[in-house]
Image (cartoon, rainbow, N blue to C red; front, top):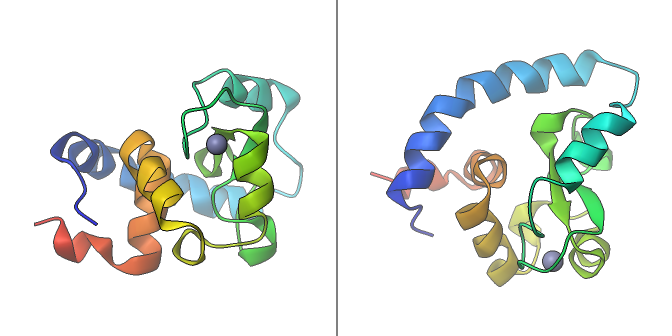
Length: 122
Ligand SMILES: [Zn+2]
């Protein structure tokens, strides 16, 4: 998958912060606040298909070493969230993952982390 320039530069800026947040999130036992969930839900359409958001998706599922932090949360429609469930991005519907990478820096970073996609970003 080719990651567009705008996403790549945003990824470069965000990745250090997200790495820090991920470490921090992994050590925080409490769930993120309802306010964070509301903000994520209001932040845009479903990142995986563009439909109106209904759920907050953990990009990396909690059951798969995901972290409970805003950096791992994106708005998703019910259909996508229920379809994705416990799957990693690399295990899920490629079209939806592609849409997510193009529309969310958070998804792009996690996808690159899982697949080594940075190798094709040059
Ligand atoms: Zn969707």
